[in-house]
Amino acid sequence: MVNNLENNFKDDFKNDLAKKLVLAVSLVMGCSGETVQETGPSRMVNFQMSEEGFYCDFNLDTPLHPALFDRIASAMKELDPGAAGGPDRALESGVVYELDHFSGVYENGDANGRMLQRIYVLAFDSKEGLDAYKALVNEASLRDHKILGAQMRLFSSSEDIGQGLVLWNPKGAMIRYLLEQFAQAAHILNDYQWVYTPHIGKAELWKRSGHLDFYKDSMYSPIVIDEEEYYLKPMNCPFHISIYNNEAHSYRDLPVRLAEFGTVYRYELSGALNGLTRVRGFTQDDAHIICTPEQIEEEVANALKFSLYILRSFGFENFSAYVSTRPKVKSIGDDSDWEMATGILKKAVVSSGLEYKLDEGGGAFYGPKIDLKLKDALNREWQCSTIQFDFNLPTRFEMSYIGRDGSRHAPYMVHRALFGSLERFTALLIEHYKGEFPFWFTPVQFGIVPIKPSHDFYCKELAGTLKNLGFRVNADYDDINMRNKIKNFELEKIPFLLIVGDKEMQNRTFSVRSRKGGDLGAMDVSELCVYFRDEVEKGKPKCIF
Image 1 (tube, one colour):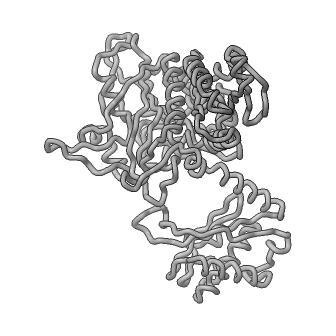
Image 2: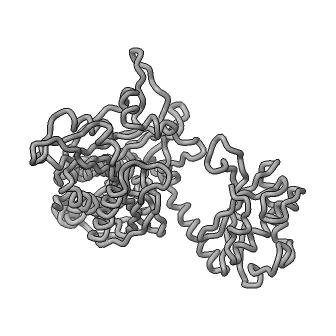
Image 3: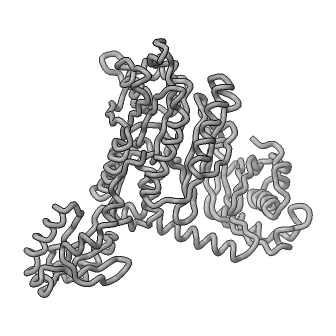
């Protein structure tokens, strides 16, 4: 709780606007609270600035509703300049603002805490700034993966199944299949070993790993089987460690790189769930690298290089790196280990050509990490890859290898996920590309349009030929006119249409129409393959080491 918010306001126009908002809330709610101190029934307990404005959290006796919100907006506009104390720099400088929306939030994100009323305010130093932001918000709404996902029938959910549990519809599942196929082949080409592990594990496993001590609030309740407790897995780490520990290892065997698409289950508050980005069951492209101290620097650098290769393969280039250091309150390991590990992470980022920012105290209790964030087409930042040191689990699970000296040694271990999760990464792709995916991972590449029923037989033959060449094809044989067939395919955002009439059937060709480039003229199958050869190559993973 912030007890003296006056000291937290920056001396700029957002300061003045926040004071005016506090006064407007007090006037409308008929209570005290004319300062930014936490006094009276309308007391404000939190204030946070952002690039687009700020928000204030109020502890109100009456929850906000649209009519009250409108009255607060009107009252704020009617306040005289300087009414909130001191000169009204907001109005004097030509600032424009707008009360945007409100919501209920738990204090400090704690579901057991009090429910506060949060008011969001847009504030810019010019009308042009506000208009540009609104245009950005409007474009973001057009790219919203929840809306596009429904329109394109990519994924869905069901109250019968449960909140935060995703159903991948056929076209969405095809996108996921293509992501998995590319990533799995790339991992194997670059010396990762693929594994599969169960979805549940005994309670003793999670006690030993420390998850029941440090992570239980995010885990689901236990399942009792044959009088033993099992938990849905929140992470894949103990399973990969068990695979490693199933046999003895020499230093000659290392590094060992184990990878899988591991589905995990973590509890999220229902109010925090959001499409594919915040869910209760999701699949990570998870891997654990187990190596000697002499190998750790190269392995971290290669993990980062591999991550950048995967992300760039999907068309992303604008990255930011964050190196998270030792938490100030709870952590394990010697300071020298943390300094060594943090130094290796920094060196890996620099050698990759990226700049980094320090996230002081942002590491996990068991080790520092690199977080890779990328920017989408709207310049919004998304969390993707994580490369994480672990000083905890190798000791807890007594992992070891025989060194050159014939003695037993504890290995180093690095966790890493490149997509982050397949769900979140798919949401990113939908919004970045506005549903118009690059050719190699769009769910349907060609829509075939027979103009008349007499063209259906040739179109079926054409579809079969293209499928055998590895293309993904859908044909519309319904007895409707050509324009409606084209319109239906365009709504599905299929990038290329192959239109067949009498002339095309006679010449064993088809007219190619691009969603973006218009009419590309007549082609036969061999010409089509040549035309799309480079696009097909983009979907073929490579060995980069």
